[in-house]
Image (tube, rainbow, N blue to C red; front, side):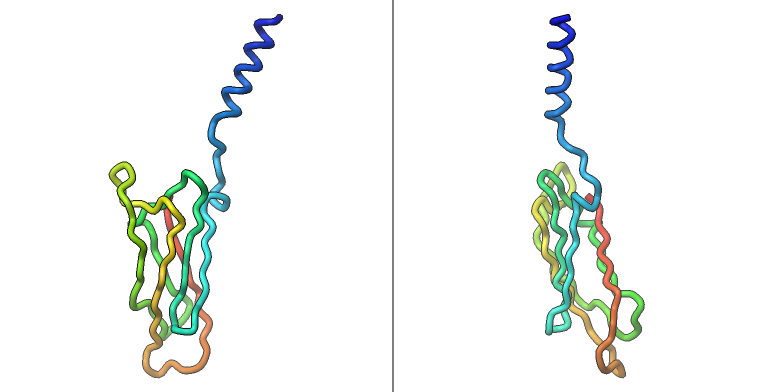
Length: 116
């Protein structure tokens, strides 16, 4: 009986030390806001020991005519097991432009897609 209790205790300790599996909404928390210079300040808060593939980051403006992305400033990615990745929460600056003929305040839908 003593051996069974020790085995169960050891088994419990072993599996409680394994890393916790995070759901995507816990591992990645995106943020975005429009500043006064027609730029979107975007970031993805990433959990500890999580990373984002740099080449899988995509930004889109949809549901609007006449407003488009003209430039994206990205932070420097690092080599992580042969892939370029962000190992700390990255910040991005997305510059927008209104086409001629577009005036006034417009609503846009901004989408960030990523893979980690």
